[in-house]
Image (cartoon, rainbow, N blue to C red; front, side, top):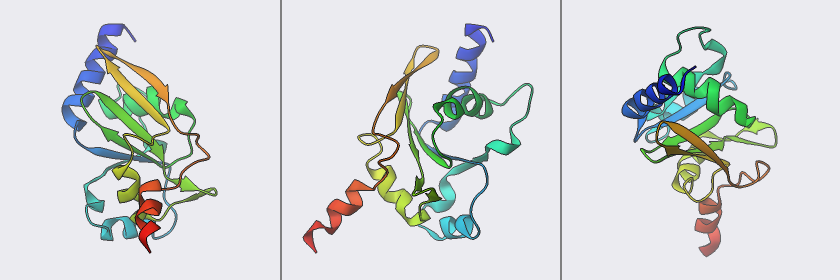
Length: 149
């Protein structure tokens, strides 16, 4: 795809999703989505099942997932905080299982400092920076909040 088309896809994606969060998944464990929707703000995450990505003429979010998120090779599901300057990516698994949806609040609270990858917007492209080790997926802000107990 030509650079101008990529830039167009990126600018269209950012225009639609900046300020939002995405959950990229390949299906959820039983009752996980139901539990997510019970959480405060849980229904506000845009959810995209990567098993359903179209093969041609992708929407900007499909382009982003296929071209930039899946190649990170992080366990699914992923939570992505989208800002105009960067996309902060963290997987939602621990011990090979999806974390409880109630932990998403804590993971998002610290995602700008503790992410597995940050995709920095540079003009019409994204530069990937690695963050914390994918094996590290504790919600540090949650654990810190327990320190006073």
